[in-house]
Image (cartoon, rainbow, N blue to C red; front, side):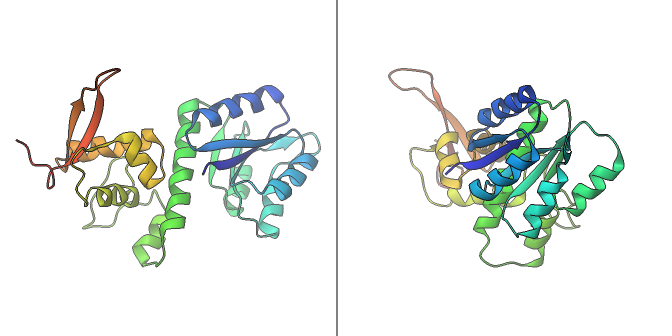
Length: 232
């Protein structure tokens, strides 16, 4: 099921760019575009999107009005604030309001895409955690916090919980191996995210990868557990 995005920006060209960026990121759908705060308030209450991409400055006021209204009615909608403002005060207010991310204009696709990927992984973690311990709480609240001493250090872009989910997939034997697309479906992530973790595990000798040639089309890269698929 795709995560729903509401874009709120009074510049139609910028809104169209953000829509294009969002629809290039797997697993997201733009459910609406609002060009002013009044429409944004109505659409956010009716559509109840998972995420709002929110501009800061509008002729009639500040976009943070939407943020605080969401919080006042306890709506389960997250916000990424997108703004050209480089002053500290709007960032401080955004942090107090609990924004998921804060992106400065002009928005580069890579930074935009990374924000949506982190949001997707965050929502998946929130849905998957049935019971909490302190390390899980810390990871959910502070996903970029320095890893405590004695715990594995992971490079940028590798999250411990997502990595564990993918490792769990390969506990069961898969004689034909799994493609990045198949793993993505199992864990509910994008193919790009799944491939990043699969290549990480391959580089660290937990998985092996083989190119499988079919009768037509390009060869497919499939991944095997080293434990369940020993080399010949």
